[in-house]
Every structure is written in structure tokens, then in C-alpha cells.
Length: 158
Image (cartoon, rainbow, N blue to C red; front, side):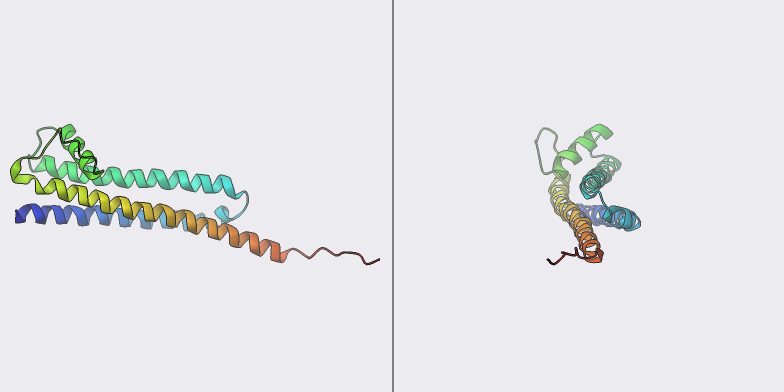
């Protein structure tokens, strides 16, 4: 039991570390694109940021699933990589069909994979919202500064 908890804890920490590094890399990418993202047109750029961020998030979920799958395969819990990936994906997304099960000696890892997936989904949802919020606020500040810099319209007196 304790070996399962230890392995599960290491895997959870590893997947969160991967997500953290990926978020950091995305933040660097967005900061380098900041001046371009804040200039008009805003809506297409916001849609692009949404698309890139969703692909980034899917990449992090995929990495988490593969970390679990390769570990389960390395422990000889599953005979094929396909079965390990399938079980990891179903567990990580908390879908849990129940058609592929872990052996009784390893069943705690299934719950830990589900808990890890749930935690990761929450973290990645927060990341998605934060990225969009940051870009949109920057765009709105750019508009405010632009409007403030424009000279006020002069209304002729009669």
C-alpha cells in the first residue's frame, strides 16, 4: 500500500511540475507577444490566444496521461502501452469506464491517477482563464491609453 502511495505521490508531483513549467513557457511566449497582442484588432488575437492556450492545455493533459501510462507499463501492470494509455486517460479524466482495471495489488494508483487528473484539470482551467483575462485586460488598457492620448474634439461656439 505504501509503495503505491509513494509512486502515486511522485507521479502527481511530476505532472504538476510539468504543468507548471509548461505554464511558465506559455507565459514567456505571451510576454514576448504582449505588444502585438494589445494592439488592434483585438478579437481575432483573443481568439488566437484562446486557441493556442487550449492546445497548450491539451498538451499538458496528454503529458500527464503519458507520464502515468509509461509508469504503469514500466511497473508491468499492463502488458501493452495501448492498455496503459487507455487506462491512464480514462482515470486521469475521471471518466472511469471500469472495462480495464488495475490488479488488486495496484488499485490505489487508479484513485491517485483520478485525483491527479482532477487537480490538473482545475489547475489548467485556472490557467486558461488567467491567460485570457490577462490578455483582455491588457487590450482594454491599451484602448484606454489610446483614447486618452487622442485630442478632444473641439466644438465651435456660435
